[in-house]
Amino acid sequence: MIKIAFFDTKDYDKALFDKYNKDYNYDITYFESKLNSETAPLAKGFDVVCIFVNDKADKETLDILNEYGVKLLALRCSGFNNVDLDHLGNIRVVRVPQYSPYAVAEHATALLLNINRKIYKSYQRVKKYNFSLDGLLGFDLHGKTVGVVGTGKIGKVFIQIMKGFGTNIIAYDLFKDMDAAKNLGFEYVDFDELCKKSDIISLHCPLTPETKYLIDEKALSLMKDGVIIINCSRGELIHTDALINHLSSGKIGGVGLDVYENEEDFFLKDMSGSYVRDKNLSLLISMPNVIITSHQAFFTSEALHKIASDTCQNISDIFNSGECKNELK
Ligand code: NAD
Image (cartoon, rainbow, N blue to C red):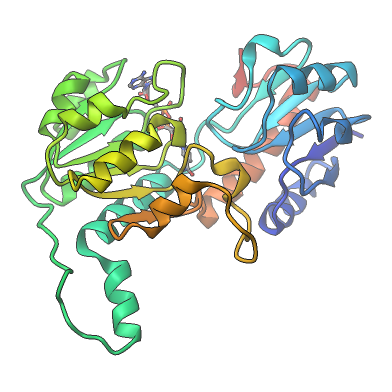
């Protein structure tokens, strides 16, 4: 029987993996801990290690897993920036490249509407019977320019949604999809031009050495006054110190973040009884024009079912046929 060490387990993961595992009969042990070099010994004696976005498969961790004879790292997510692909040794890696681009693109839209129309503020006010509109002024999305960084699966769905609002779309991507540009009606520009022209910027590219701190001091300086920035991709795309400087100066109109560069110590867990030792995160949470969700964009029922079913199938493909279309090579 294939033995799986499942890291960073939440109740909803267990419920769905137990459901889909009825067809596969894997021997799954669920650990609450995240994978890193300190927790890697938990994986001793297992064939497969199953991880999510904030587990860390760096060189040190992979060396330990190799020593234990772990054969497969099964990512139950699409991004793989947390895996050091140069130090895999004998370990193969599979992922779920697409579970629901709609989930993430719709969440990015929710953050944008929430920030622009100040829904979070009005919700709290009305709860206290304060029906005043002071400070709740937004703007029409219709006719505005939306800059989309990364026109892959999620970026394209986001563009389709934004088209429904009557916005003009400009996009930046290292690899242009000219068919999509023609069919969806958007234009590719270089990154600086996107920064200069956009009223709204939404990030949908992966975290790579090239995109780390893509939104830095220089990029922020180029942006229009009042720009709204949405990040549902990875926290390290944005240089947080620079973002806070430009929020404090009043240049940025609003920010919606589903990810944060040091999120792994905080996101996806209840910290309400603890002291959050991260000044930048506390500062961002306290700002009136910032809304933060806790890496929630993927979190729809459809996405969770697909993650569980595809991860079980990926593992079966590797162990039964030796080939898996979702293997990272
Ligand atoms: P995708 O691979 O379909 O698309 C990524 C796009 O980014 C591609 O078109 C690619 O060419 C482009 N790209 C790569 N390097 C670039 C660069 N240096 N500059 C500009 N563009 C670049 O991926 P996807 O499924 O659309 O997902 C995008 C990202 O969303 C993932 O990498 C992941 O980080 C993030 N994500 C977040 C959540 C969440 O819950 N918040 C869930 C899923 C995915």
